[in-house]
Length: 388
Ligand code: PSV
Ligand code: MN
Ligand code: MN
Image (cartoon, rainbow, N blue to C red):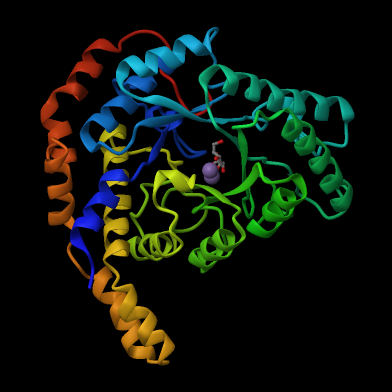
């Protein structure tokens, strides 16, 4: 039997981090459909993130991306975030948008370019000191397009050297979240293509290095919940970048194309006792909203994760373990599916009402007038985008 009060407490305590870049304009390589009212500054992105938190109650931190969110005074930016009711979360590095990085950043054959990329990682840790951030998120676009273009093994050595230097600079309460990605922009070989490579580097570095699972970075058919279970068992799962993929790195709303996969992932989290913020996993979004309004899309993504989590919490684990122990394949599967097939929207509506929130955050946002306000006010200046 599931303890409904405990389920509601767990849902109320859940935390999801939003990405500053999701509030700006973004697009595919073919076209950016600019939207009105989009933030022009890091402060305006933070203000939008605060709105997501105000309507959902579970998104109190926002991740920054350097240099997209570059400011002179990061302490002041942190204070501004606080005044809006949120805090700055993970700092994301960017060693993929400079001409120098054509052949790689930290794995580049040129030592001078490797130095520049490593210095950026160190600079990001300086920023973390000022924002009070715990997490440094590392994603490297490094890789090669052609067989023989560079030495696969030497590139691993260079990667390790850069990571080690940055790792040694981490403060006691700071850590790495090391992403992997199957392909793109490199097509023949990526230097961190999969969770195993990320995991091995993290093990080599030490306990402050953990793996970040971006749900969009796998081959079709990859069993992501297996990766979750494995990394949790090893104590090496540090974060998620949630988004929805159908073909590649689609970066669409979490839980959109495959809510069942999101449920299976969240079941492993619940089963591993890793949902509560005290466990230390940073549940982030990493998305871009190209054709839909950004703030309600981010609110919808948060709700999708909450729904998957609620279903995961409803799994009758005693019944499941018993069926598994008895080798009752059909019953075990039925127990899991019972939870998945439950309509959890009423439970979540109650959790929100208990927290003094509108039970329907998307509707409440639409009725709030905030969208009209930012469209009217945010005129002039340069709209922020993916890369601006
Ligand atoms: C590129 O694939 C990417 O989506 C990575 O997942 C990063 O987390 C994100 O961009 C921001 O740098
Ligand atoms: Mn990511
Ligand atoms: Mn990605």
